[in-house]
Picture 1 (cartoon, one colour):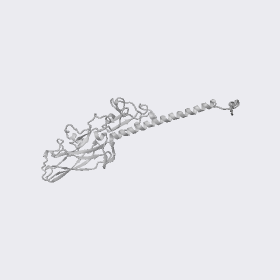
Picture 2 (cartoon, rainbow, N blue to C red; picture 1 turned 45 degrees about the vertical axis):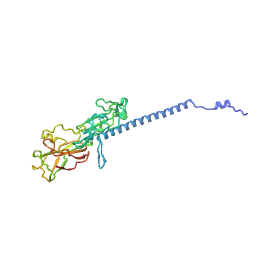
Picture 3 (cartoon, one colour; picture 1 turned 90 degrees about the vertical axis):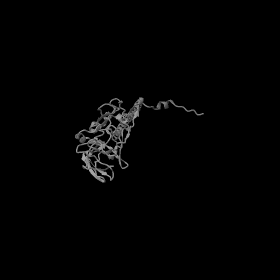
Picture 4 (cartoon, helix red, strand yellow; picture 1 turned 180 degrees about the vertical axis):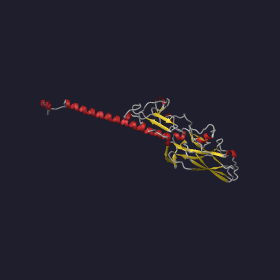
Length: 332
């Protein structure tokens, strides 16, 4: 049997790590760990920032739709403004049903209008509360106004919507990831031209035709006419409650053209008369989308046609010049 042994000299000559070397190893491991934590933290901050930016873009699309996108040869009609007729008063209107009239077909106008959301995908939190927070999960509730931690400003008159995240610290101001996004210099998320149409100067030629044996007679008192544009307001077409009482009211209404007058003898049987209606030289802003045109009397706001529910449909999209439109109004 062969015996092996370790001599005292060999043990004495064996060399281990010195204290200094151990300290160097510990320092290197600590530095690597610190770098890893720092990298992970920055990656998390960047992810939350990107998520905030994505959610802002989603709010923009939810409100204004995508009028630059094409569907069946025309703009893809959609979004809160096109459906309701105004900007949301707060973000909760994009999420919660029951706050506005539901999506409904109006047979008198021939168009749909109303709330058909949710317009953004919300998350249900504790207690079933639906929210739409920024990427940092900043606080907020369904209180007044319910904006889920976002800084929101709405100017319905100017057509401007501002939505701002308060950053990683959830407070105004700050730097780097704690800074407000977007900053004030970036302007509003939406401006009027993104979701409204200016009818100023728009001309529509209406050709009235009276077929032979049509049996239609136009009362002389109803020869002064206007073109009315139907679009939703607060989700429905039930406006105005009463017809404008003065010429100034009628001329300044965003939904009415200036007046035009048929010949005293009306439209002769078997003939036609063309009138060009103009929406005036002052600004008249309406929400974009598919809208309806109808001819009404200047006196009472109705047209004495045997079928007064006939409307001509027209699609009006933002940032597109309005061209002269021609429609035919058949009297029978």
